[in-house]
Length: 277
Image: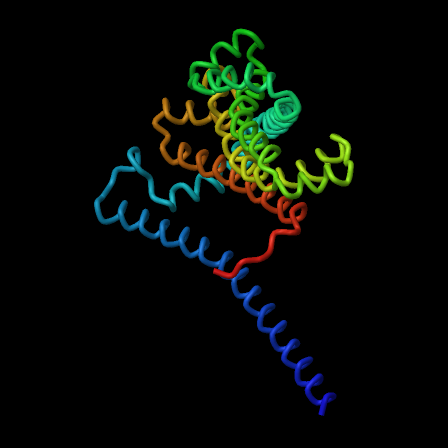
């Protein structure tokens, strides 16, 4: 009788695990398919709007015209994407590394945070279009000012989230570490850093998109190549299909960058339980 009950319980567990895995796969496919359906729906709506309302091509081209430009000028678009991608990635790394280092200093020295955090807030309030000319004057007309602009855009959200994550630890866990005579170094790396990772990756996913924006804005100020420069050239030439194609390329790279950071987050943060909604 006991063996029968144990066997029945084992079968139930297998069935429950199979149901859980099936639901997990269903949700994974749903996350892939729904955005694709939404994109196709928006493209159809865009195409129908252009056709039904007879919108002139120089105002808003049809998706077909944009796709033709993407195919015909793919090489030129990719050659302009390369410097923008380099500037965005370098700015992303530089800005986030600086934010993590300063957040660490803020957590260890409260007086440093009280002195310099308001300065960081003030710098963040300066519009990007106002910072860009200053950085071009200071750093020249190469990639350096674009990287600096991308880094500045990434810096503040990561700083705020990292400080919050490093400070917002469980008081009971902190008390336990102190009871166990943990050193400040052990408390930082074994308690504060793991606790800050969800906060940090939330900021990194935002920074993945904003770093591309920063690089493009920097290219508007003074550049002959890059997605930002191509946007300006297409705008002044009233080449609306090329303008839209350039925006699509920049947005696609930004989305891919976001997905890469999200994939790294799933690899690093493994203790977050899957939630079925």
